[in-house]
Length: 197
Image (cartoon, rainbow, N blue to C red; front, side, top):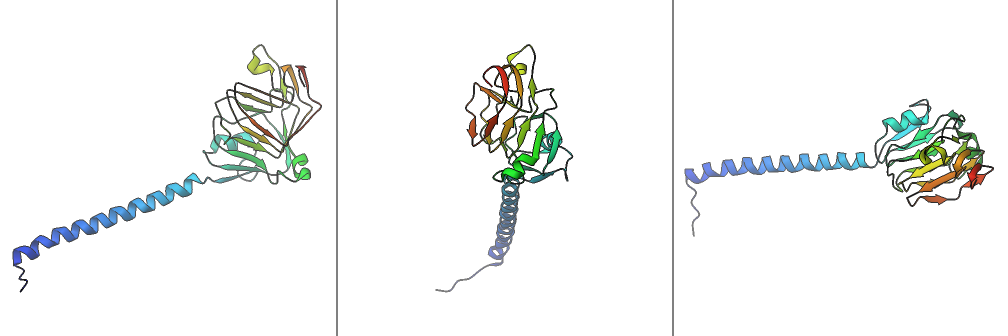
């Protein structure tokens, strides 16, 4: 059998070839976009103090999935995770010398660390000495959890030394209510509160 192609048939193949090329281009663009999205979802690394002078400005700039790595030093601040699924950690949470020398100092003004925006276990604080927080005020939200305060949140709090914090009501070191915080391998020492240190 002889296969004969007319000029009309040849012309009709050209638009089809263009469509195939265009579809391949679209698929390649989609694959590149998905690859870029996947690499973004793995998160950036933000360093304190080289990228930001303190932890809270780094948290403000961070996106979900980011890791903030804090070098040893005393950071006088009160931090709030702002509902972000981020990890805030010292340079080595398993090294006690690093933990002892990477200090979040609440300055005696508020809780050192707050999780009050429905954070999940993907919001992690790890490897700090959390010291000198003061929770005082009229509402439970202000007068509890001198070191760490959680409300309607379930963060991960691990490998910290939480000491010498004060709460006028409850939880001098840590107060977590209406959530399921993961509290793992912390040293909680010498905190003071009216109900439970």
